[in-house]
Length: 303
Image (cartoon, rainbow, N blue to C red; front, top):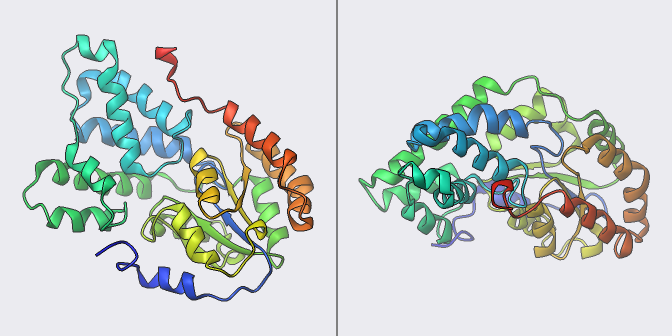
């Protein structure tokens, strides 16, 4: 059974919805609307990664690798499972780690889980995959890790407001385009944050990892309902741009470290161009080039 056959009820509703406006805008959440990336990774993901995967002997280097992958590189914002594999791979290759003879888990079963197409890359998807491989210690560790991460996020990440310019932009957009949240974060966490800060009323759907990738979410929402130049993805990571490209949509970058100005520019410049049909081309390319320059693919310790 592939992901399409296993589509959730929410995904079916997303696929079957009818547009209320001529334009569709997908919006990422963590690091894009909410300034939550650093607290989630530094206080929630990284301590649990060190604890569950036995990285205490190289904790310093594990932190550096995890921060690079998830905050400061072209992998920023990717799904937690390939992000974890990338962190462990970078750690395994680092000379300082090798000199300590530290054991870095090869996570071969997680690689198979990521590559398979039967289950989505979500907690529920991993549970279903683990049922097909009973007694696998690596998958048991992965389930304990992801559950602990979510519990830590629920207990820790509270009261973190959206970027003020993002709130203003969403309020202005409401009533002019169909807005959806398209994120790799679990849906319950998204709903909690968007409701806590009274932003859920601006969007028609809040879509997390349970539905699929961001590209799959956009594809389900668009599904022949909008011309491709009437679809825009707003995000803070290269994966958001790739999700837009997967469905032929346009992409607007929220630049890490310059989020407020990015949202202000979106409201003042980019959205008028988008609605007028003049966003694509040189203007969009210049924004994306500036954005990608901020997110390298080589960690600082290997340059």
